[in-house]
Each structure stands twice: as structure tokens, then as C-alpha cells.
Length: 120
Length: 112
Image 1 (cartoon, rainbow over the protein chains, first blue to last red):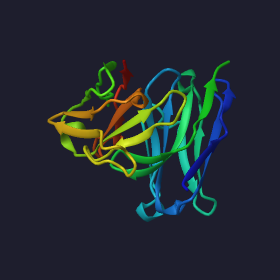
Image 2 (cartoon, rainbow over the protein chains, first blue to last red):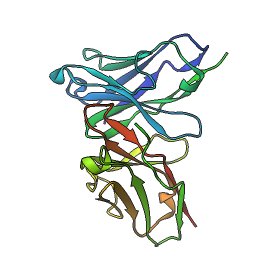
Image 3 (cartoon, helix red, strand yellow):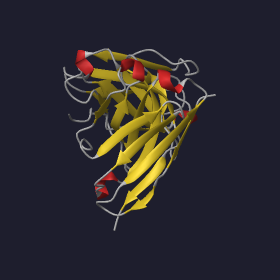
């Protein structure tokens, strides 16, 4: 059974950093791209960014709203994806979902989400 | 890159059909056959319902169907059931010269 479990969310002050982790199981993690999608309270979904599999270079892409502040990485030996968030803003407050990315705007598995609250 | 436009809400009685539109541009919806739809119940993670405009993942009822015409994609729910009441989001590939994925604004489906 495919499972994605996020951790690392919490309350953080504006300007500070936070790192989220996504621990995967039930599939060959290294074969897949992984994406992070977020949802602000009461709002819609926003695709934050993704990291390709090593077979496709392991490169990353980011939404304009987080580019230069957020970094996605992966440790295939541990089946973990990370989202490093720096220079956090109040508008980054959201539930962050880790997803298995099949490409072509298709993600087939989602974690349960972890809430990040940016507030002083 | 702007969000795709969806109606804020649609409603229907059990057994009826409802259709949700998702309007983009020739740079996203109209340019590629890569539109997906996600269902989200309150407090839950989204679930993939349709991909590649009209394909259904295993386990998704055939009451759910997708289509596209020009810059507008559509999700139709036939034989509406109580458990279909949820938020629905479309998503489109937008090419490789920009961040490649854009979500729709979301539609609340209410079963009367």
C-alpha cells in the first residue's frame, strides 16, 4: 500500500525557516517524481514545486510564489522528500501535501498534509 | 500564470447530472491534453478522479467523466450521489517555459 506521511509542520515566525519531510512507503521511491502542493485555510490548491527522479536528472521546478525561497530535495536511500522553506511569509500559511507525481498534471497519491502557520 | 477559472458552486438533486467547467487559455488547457480533476472532501486530502482529460483511474466510478473543447475542460458527474458532495479542482499542464502546472479555482458541488 502506498503511503506518504508528512512531518515538520508547526508555528513559525515570519522570516524564519522550516523544513518539511515526506516519508514514503509501498513503492520504489526513486522511480518517481515527487511534488508538494499547498492549500491556504479556506482556499484552493496551489502546486508549490516538484523534484524529478534521478533518471530524469533529479532537477526541480518551483512556482513563482516560492521560487528562490523554497527548495525541494530527496534522499532515495531513505525514501524521503524534503521541502526546505526559508524567508517564510504570512501568506505561506497553509496545509502542505506531499504527493507522488506521475507527470502531466497527475498526482495519484497524497499525504494527509501538515499545517504550517507563519505568524508573529 | 493565472489560476484556471471554475464556477464557485454547482448543485443538483440525487440522480441528476452536473457539469463543472474549467476555463484556461491556449497555453494550458487548450494547448495540451493533460487536464486532471481532483475531488476533496472537507478535512481530507484531494483524490485523483480524472487524468489526461478523460481517463479514469482504477476505482473511480464511471459516473465521473471528463472532456475538453478548446480552452475549456469539463467534468460531468452523472447519477449524482450524496457522497459526491465535495470540492472539485481541475489542473492543467502549462508547458515547459513556465512552471508547468496550474490548478483551477475550485468548485463546490452540493447535492440537494
